Amino acid sequence: MFDKLKPRVNIDKFLQYGTDIEVKGRFKDTLAYNHFTTEDQARLKEIVSLLESSTNEMVRIFETYLKELKAEGIERISTASIERYINIFFYEERNEEYVDQIISFFEELRTHHYNIGKLVVAFNQFNFYLITNLLAKKGQNPHKCLQLLEVLQRAINIDQQILIEVFTEKVVEQVSEGIAQLMDKNAEIMFIKGLIQSLEEQNHEIQNASAATEEISASIADVARSATHVSEKTALAVNKAENGRHVISNALDEIVHTRDTFENIVKNFSQLKVYVSTIEDIVGLINGIADQTNLLALNASIEAARAGEHGKGFAVVANEVRKLAENTVSSVKQVNHNVQNLRAFSTEVSDSINSTSVVIEKATTEAQEALPLLSEIVEIVEEINENTNSIAAVCEEQAAATDDISNRMASISNLSEDVRELGRNTGSAVYTLSQTIDSFRQNMINNNNILLSTKALLSLSKTDHILWKWRIYNMFLGLETIDPNEVTSHNHCRLGKWYFHENTKERCRHFSSYQKLNEPHRHVHECAKKAAEAYLAKDMVQAEEHLSNLEEASKEVLQRINELLNDLEYEKQLRQSK
Image (cartoon, rainbow, N blue to C red; front, side):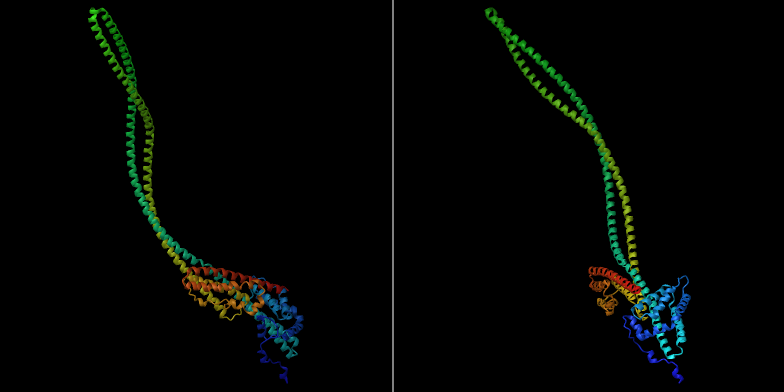
């Protein structure tokens, strides 16, 4: 009889699973696992009606527990937040809004750095306080009290489960975000590929420059030899120019002397012309005397004829005188003719001498003007000789400097090769680091059976896409081998499975960020596959192009995921504010 009064728990009821509460998402599984039903919701309101008088004490006890758990230097959680949570716990129906509201409180606990293990203890202690109060109120009715205790325990279990999930998921989110940032930073080291390529090109250019430097050095040596040869020839030219200047100076002196001689000749010819004129005058006088003599002889002949026999001797004399006069006239004419010829010749010679004198005068003037020019030429040639000597010396110095540059270029080439090898080693080390980080990420998610929140899943998806870009990039460095068939379609990766899930569509299809995510996501997978195919076909130009397109598409995917996370957070805040 007394056994019937003792309440006993039905083990089958404890093992029941399911809920009749209509709710979406993970919370439905939580309610089902704890077998929380609409009947339990009603009984929870019955419990609060029994404990309503103890509400203030509940708040005080909960606040005391939290105060003891508070980390040093951290502001304690407000009394209003605790009151609001207790009211939500007892009065709100178990639906999506309920989850948002208690998660808000649990996140507040997390941001105040409460330890999750101690929080579970605090919730258990709070539950124990509620149980003792409930026993005090309903202890006289054991069966009813057991029903209410079961409901209270289920409600507390649900909140504790969500509390642990909030803390766990937040850790996963933070780790995922941290890993995503690490991978993103590692991905930024993609410049190593460009660095190595640049170093290879630089090394090639250095070798070309070194060869060119050697050629320049040889050319400078040739120029130095040529400059020395020119300097020697210029020195000879200076000597010859100086000798030429002396010769021209002497010739100029002779020309001046010739000019003076011609001036004397001109003067003598002028005197000759005077003498010729005198001769002409004398010849004219003789010619006049001859004419008078001839006239006298004629008169004597006439007088002799008149004298007859007595005048014959006189006639003979007169005749001889006449002949002599005629001969004299004839000779005078010949002399006059010769004098005329002499005058004409002397005039021509005088004109020629005058012309020659003018030419000599002009030549003398020009020679005198040329002499300073020749002196300047000698000075210029001497200056050229000095400059040529300087050029030869400079060329020798340049040849030595170029040889030094060539040696330094060889050293730079060796250093460049060392840097390139360091770049490869750095790329390999970063690749190994990325593999370690990804292995940690996979182990954390896959080996701990953690249910991922949407935020954590999207954060991991960001890392997935950064990793794909990273793998393709390392394929170019020879650190990764990718089979094109290994690149699945965008429907089958972590993000794709979430994206095309019916629950996701129902929850996110109204966001433009969700709508815009599919196309770049598809493009990422296509570009990764094409890059792997092109690399396998050794078509590096196409492979590089697909890698570039992959980078652009990946950037857009990350942008859309961030936008979607912001949209979800904003919607969550709107629900909590209602």
